[in-house]
Length: 319
Image (cartoon, rainbow, N blue to C red):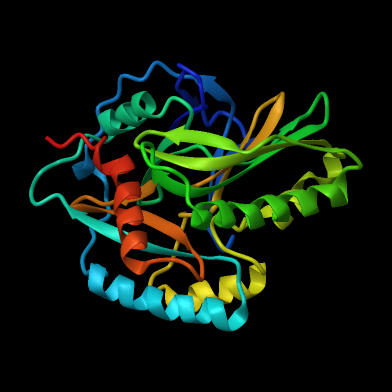
């Protein structure tokens, strides 16, 4: 079961499971796991009422990383960044919400996210005992089958909408932009890049730069493979940062910071799976992270992850 809504759309879609055509795939951060939905994509009049007690999986044992532990870990991460002269390393954590005998209306939570984040890709699925819900704006790539135009974006840096950008956020976004531009130039002789501007997402904002380029259709999967994971969810250099994430993070990212592939007759779109939560019968785990630099303040980074978790928390419908 899958429901989703494209950015700036009022329509909810599903996959009708009436063919062997793979239309939507969720890939984990390390690309070792995927959940696939087969059939044609069709518009769906969403009137479901699905509650968390309908999920077959229960969260049994989980120790949440507290603020002291997270900030102490970030102190070690900052030392590692300085020692290896990294521009940025993205570290995540999981925030636990116990339902404590209550039920979460998953359907209404999905609809709340659609309303709160009109510029986001929003999804809700239950399959093979797994349930995830997410809403996020970062496009890993969009390929137009007719024109061969490829679009992507550099999205990094996070602040409350009423605060002013500092050097930390500006420097955090630059390597993401350069990383994407350098890869695109390998596949296209002309890469168009926008000015950097504010991207509003609910109660927070990011720095965003857009890219457009003409590519060969046969290069699409290789291009996506090079772009993922972007510095916005990993760091540069990619291999060193992926190893560092395994070292410093005490949990698997699963589908967090992976990507979602949606293929229609006209386009192939890839969305980075951020602002998401894994739901169980009795609890949910909200995945949040941030770009750590040599100038980062562990206390401020903790606050940033708390702020990001509000994307899910503020839209939960508890009954």
